[in-house]
Image 1 (tube, rainbow, N blue to C red):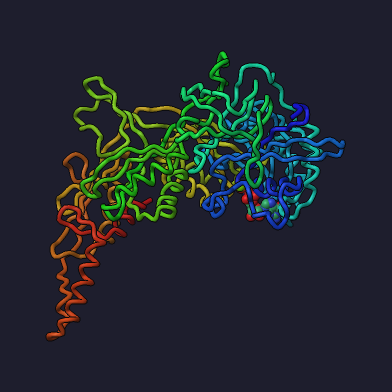
Image 2 (tube, rainbow, N blue to C red):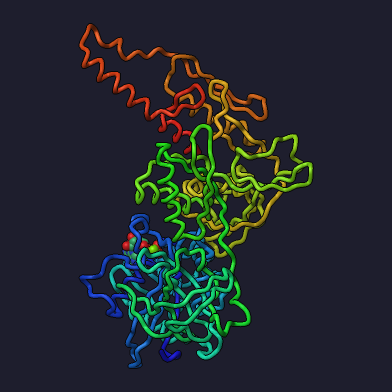
Length: 599
Ligand code: GDP
Ligand code: MG
């Protein structure tokens, strides 16, 4: 394709401002899909994504648009994930583009992710085209939103298209804007190959499908390629363009083009997002900038309710990992829960998505442990250990310094809520950095906050305290010295390893007491009295008691109806199956989960 007739762009927006809806409209208007074939939100093609209304994996699509100037342009729309957990993938997708369409909801105006994503696009020197969406809403105020864009983002917005993606109003203005104002790609088609991987996806029939943008040179069918970071080398079996309803094959893709290739690759680990594809025979001198391996931030133990399903869990995790290089897992065992895996995730949403997929797509009933971050401990002998499982926390006597991860947090909110936000951040050990007025009706607060405090319900609590107006963005900042303790839970004197947690000393007492109360509520009365205790080292810091109760099911059977007795006994046995024996105490799985879902 003639480079001057190519436009590579992303759509960026705060969540729910209409990115997916506009993508669908663009696809529709370019005639790529018949109206009746138009399944809603084509780019979000996983069921889970549809249900949650989010885009988990980046995708791309090539559209042919006949512009008002009479020329036909190839528009490569690269979709980006819409959540803070997937910020790195967003950055790689943006690096594959020359421009970005910035959607702002005409009734909401600029929100945290609008800013965060715009700054990202600016960092990649993209041409940013603001678009005002949802003008059909009664609360729409396009004039005010345009002023916000000019004042806060310093982007010219006077001529920004005012559209309704939902009702299909003024969509062609967006397409003309793209053709006229986003620069065509550059790059020499005969230079050594340099192509950026912005996504990859495992397919059981053809292996990994690698999505890439050619920056320099040409990728040809049959050619031997090498991923510069992973070192993996493959022969390109097939390559082509991405179409809304599948893939077109072609002989080669030249500088500026966006497409896919396959090479019977077994695992996405070989084709990491951000890696550079080059030719094995005439390699590029240096890879493209910006590659970094995905780094899990949150860990938890995942076990099956039924211990015999352990191999199924392993298979399921392996399958999910084929498609998700940022998911990590290692076998671990727990006295309380048996054999399972310690899994690492980019963030809480990523964790929830994986748990949900395991349960839904692989039909597993899971028990998970409390999520934890990675702590760093310098021991008295000078060695440094990284602890992702509270169970492995070193003995307090052997610790010289403990550190926990901190995040740089940005909260954007109308000024009215600042009085609610600040105490909440303080309570979570946030260190206030600064506060700036972005506009008369919008402030941005910066905090440095332990990630361990964010991963619980911080986002939900923030929304609740600001009527949903505040938004949150955060990134790993580094490790800071911290006064950490490990709290153990004891049932009837026996320590339950799966319930141990690491927490800041100041928070230990409150958290311990809440967990003890919750356990007391959820443990059915047993034949004996059960003390529920929390301890630091050997020292008990909280205690509750579950009173004893004799529960004899056969007492209800007067006389000798043997079949009835049998049924009752069977019923009791079934009830027992769902119990987890924790030391000498039996705990229903539901109770266990209620405790783990505390906060
Ligand atoms: P995304 O999170 O940015 O991908 O947003 P979606 O495209 O999923 O849209 C979020 C919600 O806003 C959905 O319920 C859409 O139907 C709705 N929406 C999108 N565009 C418009 C619009 O122009 N007008 C109205 N009224 N609603 C819209
Ligand atoms: Mg979407």
